[in-house]
Image 1 (tube, one colour):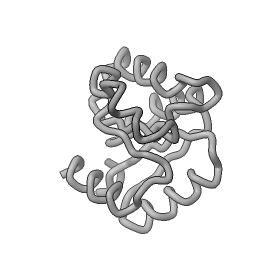
Image 2: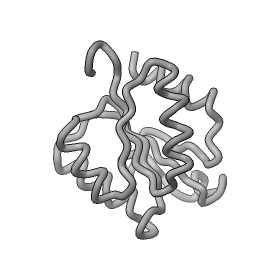
Image 3: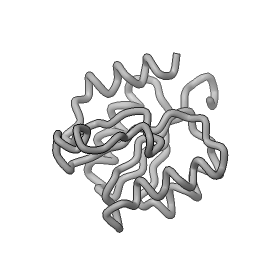
Length: 124
């Protein structure tokens, strides 16, 4: 938390998505920190210790998001991590995202109302 507001780290290589999610979450009272790659995400994480993390599965490499979560675990992360994926709705049927360290999955395009509802519930 910073200044009484929850901090959300969003890691995605799509600048349009980052801008849209940033504007929406900031308008709803959150501090948003962005990273455009898994490598940058790790650096930002170490500096900020966010309250919640949204990470894209496929960035510079197909499994960059999953590998990043492993790094967060090694650093003792306690913040909920949500996977952002455009891989298709069937992905959650084929993969146990909780074993990968994710608290949940948001399918792109993200349903903003659902995202906000889950974030509010998780950060209470």
